[in-house]
Image (cartoon, rainbow, N blue to C red; front, top):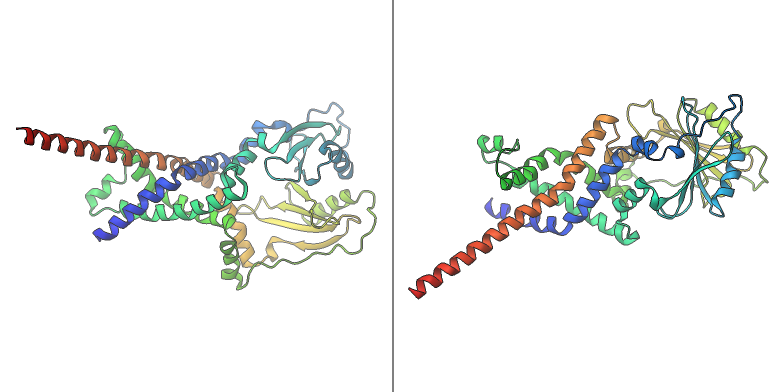
Length: 385
């Protein structure tokens, strides 16, 4: 048992020192991203709300007109998506995103009544886009993705070994390890912040790190489908039929059909795939569902506006439904505000754990160093006398 504890302590220490800084960055940016949906409209209101329209009887522009305006405002960049927000008490702006990587693509909004450009912001200037890039790839592209993947695996080792080291020998020690002794000296408080707070946040941090492997490793992502479907993810080619000339008002027709086929209230997002120029993929999330990320998708012929294929959540395989759960589990959005708060607090603790752990190691190292110096001085004194 002592040998196992020694091995676990060594792993916990040196793996933690190796990836601690990276995990602090990932946890801190993760905490920022937890409340993206709530904070983004507050920080960038022009991306969400249209400026007041004095003419109460003015009708919004057609989707086709808004798309053509988006092409003009994009200045040569290809359009990746166009979001038409659900009707609320506010006049909603139409949000457009151009193609490209996270930091170089543009986010801009158009007033749906006047067609005026309201705000244009690059990904690197947008707090949550920048945070996501830092969180996933450390601003280092594919190299950063490899590093964060290794960090995810390493952190699972840290959490498992940490639980083993935390495990108390008796009930007296258990009581000590379940609460932080705030009135103690700094050394004890720091240890409690590491051990006690680490214990309470461990289940959430483990889920976050474990689900994070989905975006780092194909074998993990594919494994979800093999476990629940008995086969890997199936990619079906969707054909839009003949290459016909685009009809006037095809996007407006697509939007109208979407609202008819999926009549619940939610944002409608039109995607324009780069590898299928004649297709439009429409996505709509069921906010009334008991869990997050329940999404229905429709595929339309871009030229004619005709429906090509339905991919409704209810008809998806078990593997796909489980895969859909990964994102809300990872971000804490699974059951709304309660799980978001748990994820947020756990991420804050996760940010602090490498710091408190480093302080523990540093103090022990200095203690050993001072003890060695004292012993050398004592031995020298005995020799002299």
